[in-house]
Length: 443
Image (cartoon, rainbow, N blue to C red):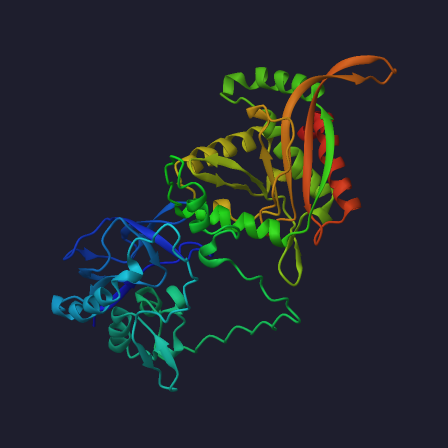
């Protein structure tokens, strides 16, 4: 029986993607785990693997097609020996709905994909319950005399695939159902999102009329820019930001960094000021654990490790790769990991787990000469640190005389639902104490 291959959800937030490249063609025999295609999400280009074995009977979505919604059929897989005509009805059905998979216009609505049933046809177990299984899994189960209702599926949406039935024994007990989580009490309704994930404000028609007599170039929104616009609009509209500002003297850190870099020169390691900032923030999250918290709608989640996100500018937008367990890593390890993540971010080669998560982020524009700024919190984070440039300024020294010091401005943007003023001040103080006493970062 022909099986539809569906557009996968390659990240928890993915609603649609671009089918960038097919790595197989019609008539090719594919095996489970084989790479079928490259899919572009709003953040990255990722490889899509086959779940089942079979023959590619029909490719339904051409490569280069944008705006393909999750769970849209993109190809038809035939069983061994099955005629290609079995793919015709499915191909015709998708062709009839072709506009749904056509490239999305600039202002097209990106409606969330509805929950869709798995492509495999449901079959009934001996107890009458409906189960979903691939054609190959059904055939193997029949040969082994297995009751599919007693097999737990590991495929998409709990679908039973080949690997699940190959190791199963006839008469195996069905795994106990997972306990159902209690529904959140009095959860506040989610704020309504603007159509297409676009920020509210003047309509496109209004703005076009305003500039009708001026020369301009229209720039289409790609998936990344559309997502950045929607998420940051949501952040400013729904998160009660407040801001805490402090200056930090960098002279001790700069001298310490120079000494360390001389010692590390033979190992090819060169520490940046940003590496020290990451480490200082990771230590501060451990010293002030109540600040290591995210907002989860109707509750807060307090993280144990220091998972620090760092904003990286890329063409058309930005990534926030996450350095996990940063409190446990040395400065040189953090430096190497950050260079790797930033390099792959610029080529959109990060996997979702590398840029999702964390409780806190750093945005550093100091290397661009910006003295100070206020950063927008990246939900569900509880705070973000905006870092400015280190600039030589006159300061009052400990003995009351006037001297010169390298001073860096820092602004902590805080979600008031998660962190109150006194707690935010304690957290920022812990960051600054680590930066002004850099030796503690080697402890």
